[in-house]
Length: 282
Image (tube, rainbow, N blue to C red; front, side):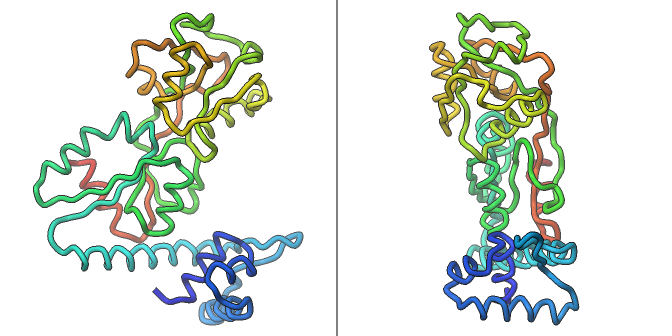
């Protein structure tokens, strides 16, 4: 892929000419010249300043989508040329999906002797960055993402529920959001789908994470479930995760949105749509 389009994508991510120049080890005038070259060739303005803040124009967003596809296809070609034998899929998945939903598809895929597979389990934010960097072919994510920047398909709507120990007063109940005050929250790190879901749900009810007296953060669902099991806090997970552990109980919060999307996400204009179809079909 042309260097100037790589520069353009870095600037799209950082929205700062100086930081883009530093990351690419270029001078700031060199970055400006490359961006101006793209604008001149296509007759559009890619960026604008609003209140001294750099942002993409409508035309810039279109070019960004095409540049992502160019970068992805270039990297995909290099991978295929390095490994001509067999068919490789590079898949990303959030922890809830990777740990509890993908197993049958993964088993079916690798049962074919000619198939190869690389699975990365991480949070939504990091997976989308890997997709932008052409490090994975497609990702299975939960929760919110910029649907204008990616091609996607909603696979299932998964109920979202609270979990607690079998001895907790919330066990099997519907509680008011005010009852969360004084509780210890066990929650995933920033950028995770379940955390985003919880924050959006609370915001819709006029609350935020400050409603809890204490917040314990862990990137491990195993740790979160273990602490909840010992009555050291409560958490919020997808129903599939909750049902996988009979040593935990569930509860609901009155007025909290009860289901959210699990989606497959890829870069439009690439062969990833067919790869996804084949993976799910098998």
